[in-house]
Length: 278
Ligand SMILES: NC(=O)c1ccc[n+]([C@@H]2O[C@H](COP(=O)([O-])OP(=O)(O)OC[C@H]3O[C@@H](n4cnc5c(N)ncnc54)[C@H](O)[C@@H]3O)[C@@H](O)[C@H]2O)c1
Image (cartoon, rainbow, N blue to C red):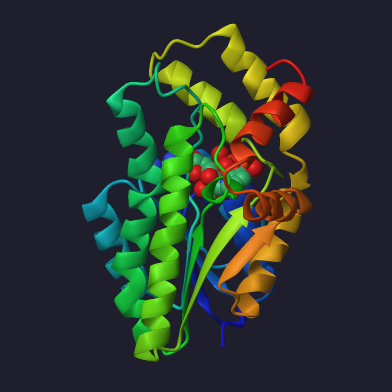
């Protein structure tokens, strides 16, 4: 179960970073891929790199009706759908005190509702395939919280709970359906730059502290190559793992949270201070 060659695989957020690397890794193994993103230029570049017969479509994963219609389109195009990688996501950084309610709505709309939309819309097709797999991209921040990231952490902790519930349901029902939640640590992608650019586009106040945070993420935290991350994720899917940790940082900090669940917030704050000015 869950081998990738010959499968029809859907990847959201495929215009950049981990999504693009997943598309390339899946296609290399002989999968047929359906790729989507809100960034049409980036999506076209991914499709060109993948080469061959690639299905692409602009899709905003926070738009429920669009995702439901998209699942039908993909199923009709390929005749079957085996795997869905709910990968599209955004970062956002601001303290709870400084945030507006709309900030949580925007982040949860993409990071959590996007995952729920993609899972629910494709699930009947995956079950019908007789060899389906749902892969939801959470984060290290679905296990370990960080200051000034309540929006992101709330979305990613929720993705983990949602996905683990689904895995239990699939096991209880005896479906031939794999369900995997993925927790990447720092992966070298445009996620921090994109968050910074999006905040500017939205007209949100962007401060020198935000610029420092962007540099800090790019220079110190986002280390692993996206291609390597995609390889780890696909290997986890092929092994039908329930949980895939990506990177030594994710594994070590997961261990920290298990070891000292109520003391780790203080340790994280001290650790972040030690890493330098943000
Ligand atoms: N890079 C990391 O260190 C890291 C760590 C943990 C988890 N993740 C998660 O991995 C996933 C991919 O992130 P990445 O690092 O490749 O970032 P990225 O910014 O390089 O790629 C994210 C892609 O999602 C797309 N996207 C954004 N909003 C969308 C929407 N509403 N509908 C459809 N597509 C949308 C963007 O256009 C972009 O192409 C995200 O869910 C992210 O939270 C990343």
